[in-house]
Amino acid sequence: MTAPDAAGRNRRARISRSRDFDAVYRRGRSTAGRHLVVYLFPRESRDADTPRLGLSVSRKVGGAVERNRVKRVLREQFATRAGMVPSDTDVVVIARPGVAEYLEERGSAALGERLQELLERGLGERAVAADGAAA
Image 1 (cartoon, rainbow, N blue to C red):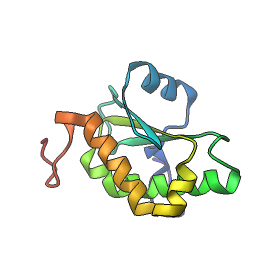
Image 2 (image 1 turned 180 degrees about the horizontal axis):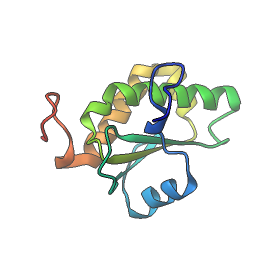
Image 3 (image 1 turned 90 degrees about the horizontal axis):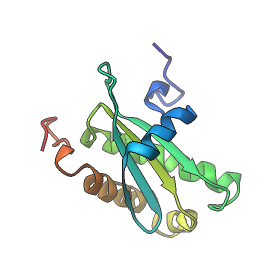
Image 4 (image 1 turned 60 degrees about the vertical axis):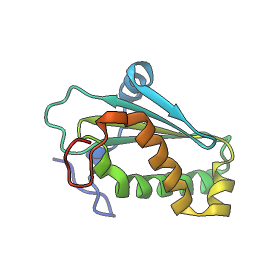
């Protein structure tokens, strides 16, 4: 088992390998908004205890400080909404140019709402209700 990172979250809940990103891009389902694109892919792993998140934030979004802030906020907002995503799901979020400005103007809660809308749209009937049962 891998050790939790500084914030207490398990690093295993992240997608970091190129082949995992490729599998989600090729076989996953995507939904898009003005500032974010979300890919969802149910993985075959039977020992999944939590959904995995992968982030793609290009240099078109901004400098290193802006990109790291966007990634941090997306990780935080996903963590608060991870309960609605089935545990055997890989999620890749792509930040589009302009998301740093949106985050600056509207705040992290607004970006989290956009993320939730895309997750709900992409999951459809696979979304998990607040009590943990499939919706």
